Length: 156
Image (cartoon, rainbow, N blue to C red; front, side):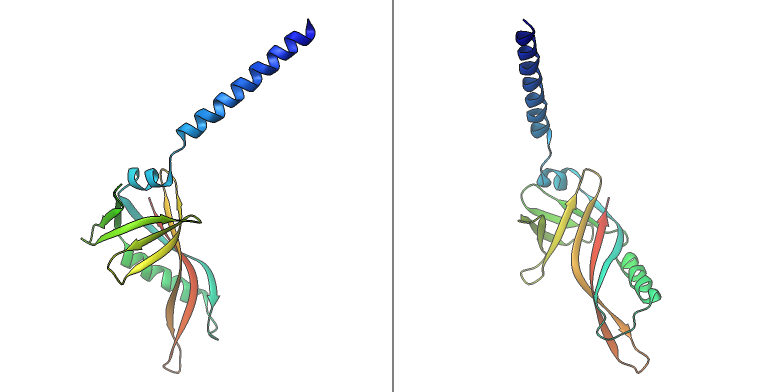
């Protein structure tokens, strides 16, 4: 009798755990749905995630902070609207096409020649686009050095 009760409890446990996991999978929202349903996405901040190459320049913290400030000012107020048909628009009247590509990336095409790919992280309340970038720093001898970085745009 104890074996029968143990078997019934075990079977009940297995069926309940498999039901809950299938319900979780059914309730999981796809990346595409998150992009579209969260639209419009409003720019929040620009981040420098990693300095890759200073091209021989002794980069100072103020150079990084100045670049972050410039990017935050130039992107202030930017919104991205993603439509379910793979099109989108910005609040600056720029249309674009978008497509999800493997390895959690997105391709944004603003014109036939302006194509950007970015690592994509998206939730119901935040979208982050990570990409290689560069900025220039003036040097005391009058030249300019290009600084290669990995950066992110954060949207809410």
